[in-house]
Length: 189
Ligand code: GLN
Image (cartoon, rainbow, N blue to C red):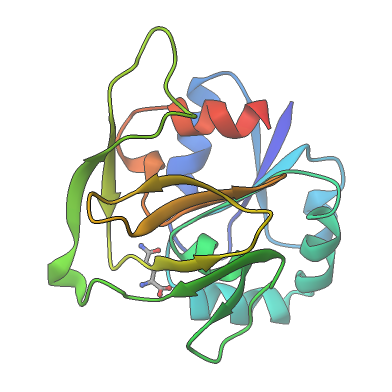
């Protein structure tokens, strides 16, 4: 299996590291031809406006949208914003996933936080613990379409992870905790 990681900006190196740790070939994607034979794509956290602008500049928007109809794609944080059908800001979005998302929903960098989440779909027989989730200037999934399954909520009910068939969005950063269950879940998709 070969997974592409969009490497325009943000914490793509952390995703590559965790994929390699679990024995998966990871390739950095910067140009359309880098996606030639990948089995899935991860869009990392970072700054979604920058990722979007660079994706436009390098001609990646249409190739990624096409990939979304045949392969799994996972967006973490800024990557989740990039996948969304809409956000309240005007910025280039792929618009492939039927979620609406609000950037920086928890406030400024200083309001970044960590919490433990119940994520029944990703727990395994070997590890049934809650998922420790790191939120860094995180977005919030404000609403989801009828085809979208909510995977995780904060204790107050707000949505922070969702899946629509082959598309996965997490508002937090599983690549920063050393817990590979979300990556394994994505590979199972
Ligand atoms: N605040 C960033 C944005 O709006 C996302 C932050 C992140 O990816 N950790 O794009």
